[in-house]
Structure formats: structure tokens, C-alpha cells
Length: 283
Image 1: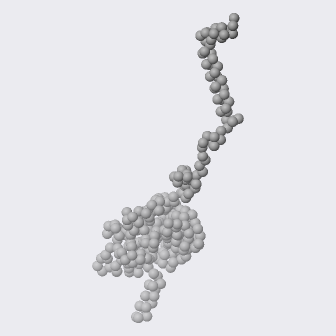
Image 2 (image 1 turned 60 degrees about the horizontal axis):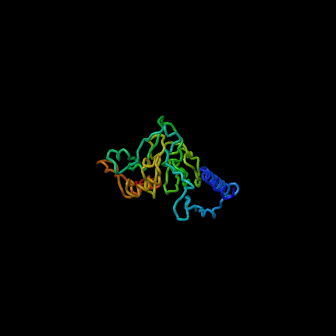
């Protein structure tokens, strides 16, 4: 039998071609698996046609080469104003802030009589529910720009904050910080006590918030993002009260004097003493 007849007989069988196809497929798959083994033949970025992109950190955020923000690298913690008392649950407000946009009755309740004159209350007075002394603390982190004794308001502590806000803590018996100290929120500042200006209020803390020397209502800041509140004020959503030369309600007949609110300052004790000496000399 010739070789050609043997091949014709072999190829004439029904299973011959399917078997050849299966063997060929197995060889192809084996070769593909062998060339793609990552342990022996790893593919580089150049072979794959890929380009490495390194994010660039700009202002605390990662940005790609197109300038689009990719991944936030760092987040800033927003500090909210807290109550300036070590135990805020056991304190309350005795006198509110003088708001010239409120009702006449509310404005009248926020006036202080001192040396025969009426003065708008530029902050809030905080007292303990048991009427005892308590520790005043920093409502925000900041730098101590004042820590001394005032003859009328008692010991006074002023803090300057990053957003230009000034918080004032007065009617203190003592102070536990000094000028130049950089303190964190909640740092003890002193002990609440009495003062001459608000002698009828007993032991209390007089707390003020100012921006550009304009007194602002502290109640608008408690538990809020200070920067957001300031932005709202600048946009006129909550107009700052007690601006220069604004006055409170008109005094009733036979009362001492009109409300004095120019520059929204507390009384100048030295000026009053000089006036009294001048009157005594003239008499």
C-alpha cells in the first residue's frame, strides 16, 4: 500500500479533522499562557503603551496634569464657637445683647444704667444657675492680646482670632493667661466675678464678640462656623448691630440721659473721674 493511500485513509476518518483542530487549539492556548505568565515575563508600562501620571499637590489637594482636582490630600477642621464657660450646661444668659433691630421692650431690657447714663449692652452676661462663680474658657482658639485689670469691668481678657474676630471676657476675679499666649479653644481664662459697671448682676461673665471694633451678637456664633457667619454679615443677611453713632430707644421723660452708643464703647472711667474733680473744684 502506498503512502498516499494511507494518508487518504487516515484523513477520510470522521474524527481526524476534529482531533487536529482540538490539538491545534490546545497548543495555541498553551503558548498564550506561557507568554503571558506575569511572574516570568512581566509587561512594562512602555510595552503596554501607558504613561505614569504623578498628581501635583496644590493648596492641600492633588491635581493631575490637566489641572483637575484628583484626590483631597488634607482636610481642614472647621472650628465652631463654643460657650465661654467650662460647664455650659449649668450656665444661662442673664442679660442679652442690645440689638437695635429688635422690639422696644427687648432693647429696654438690654440697657445698663451707670452714673446716671444709659449704655447699650454690647455683649451677653452669663451666670451660673446656682449663682456661684465658674470658670470662663476661650470660645475659640487665638492669641491673648489683653490680660489685665480694669477698674470698672474687673479683670479682662481679649483674644484675637485668625479671621480678625475679637472675643472679650470681662468681670473676672483673676486671669490664668498672659498677653502673647497662643491658646486653644476651651482653655481656662479666669473666674467669673462681680464688676462695678454691672454691679446689680452679681457674679457673672461679660462676653463680647467684635469685628473691626463693631460689637456683634454672640448668639449668632455659638455652634456655628465663624467664617460662614461673618460672610453672611458681610452680605447683609444679618446686619451688624450697634454701628457708629447709632442709638438705642429714646429715653422717657424725666429720665437721666439718652442712650450713648457712639463707637459702642463701655464708659471711660478716667474721663468720669476728671469730670467729677472739675465739678468739685468749681463748687
